[in-house]
Length: 153
Image 1 (cartoon, rainbow, N blue to C red):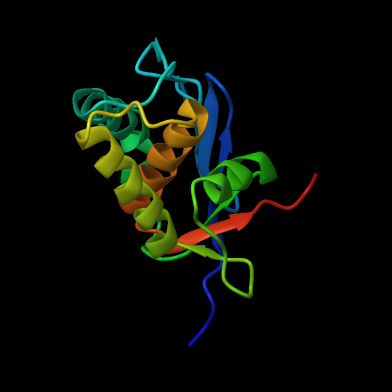
Image 2: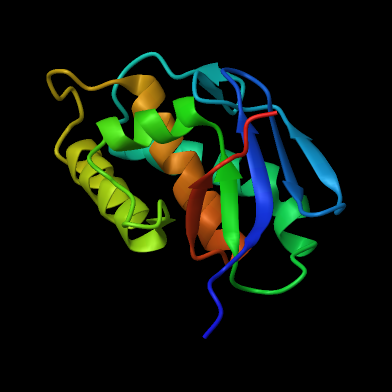
């Protein structure tokens, strides 16, 4: 069985991001980032309603990208700062440096549990929470199997 290859990339900024298919597929500019989703600053821990609203905005923003999916499988390449926020949320890579969908999903489930319990968790990091949510939605809707560090330019 062949190992998955990088088939997509995400440059996740604070308020604007770029998502695309590799090697030369379409690129999509997104009006969202780890500090702003749906035109609103991510200023505090997600509540259950706030999380549902954010999910809908992310799904709407990435829909044009996900409809262009060349084939299921593959990896999403992201920058080191994005992976660090994911690591801070408790996810980690395997020995080959792949952050599998299951690890992202576990971080997402912890976030969802916190949100349904009323948010406000001590030490909650809004940028970290937004990163987990965005990555989870990209993996899920893009049909991807995990994340890898993007090659430094």
